[in-house]
Length: 388
Image (tube, rainbow, N blue to C red; front, top):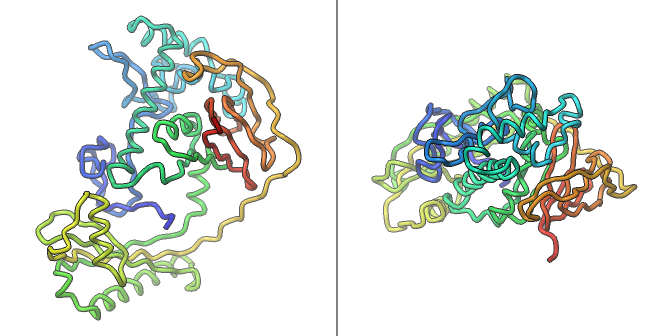
């Protein structure tokens, strides 16, 4: 339905993948409904290091924003994923954050040489590529945790790359996870902030039932949901929402009798069939002959927030690189003379063939060899594997 999964069992700062479906079993527990995420220690500030066994590692330690990566010139001494991308030519040292921060390429190179390359008998470029590949592998593993381990085929989905550093790595992740399409929205570096300002208001409520489904009266269920809806309506009205902007989503937590975990499925006709199908998809089996227990009734009250319509792009002009610079791609076995594009000058309908770099104020998109980027009518970048 296009909505993110929500969980009521989440651990902040835990190790992804330890529990069922990739759920963390460590960290700090959160028992209120939150968007179901998988945390990984592989961001732009993640520190690269060599362990006592002589293996290259990335994270979970982070340089953070202060002092940040070595290339920021703020006193950072430990090489990071961002430093590796600078050494590989993927980040423009004179146009980072629109040119507000000048990146120290040689400082990043020296840090990688001293802390990673020399202990491993590599040169700085090989070590930098290894750092990026390890970070990518951690992110691909996270993609598998929230897809394959939960019964979803990643090839059926579009990968959404946002954040300042996300588009730098997203094409490689889509390739390694075999996802056919990558979408980079306009202004990806402020995408989360935009979402914070335009997302609908939601209020979640639940009532515990703990009864077998066959023993539950439909009238009781309707009365319970109606009571939850009225409470949600009052809360949204207190937020200034008109009744016409409100909607309600009913769901039910179900499990087979004797289980200690439940699945949440939409309420309504066909409830039992949906539960069996969801159980089969999630755990690889179902047991229609077993009795089913209702654990909780859940209601999400939604208050729609007005959203500005996307502005269409100009259709005049064509994609012309603003410059070229050496960028390293493992697929090309070295540095290539890579075209660099200004995203703000790309018109609707333009195509950009990889290898290529698309730069903007708040992010950089790396297009790998063999991939083609299409600019859609609202300025999104759609990246897919090109014809071979």
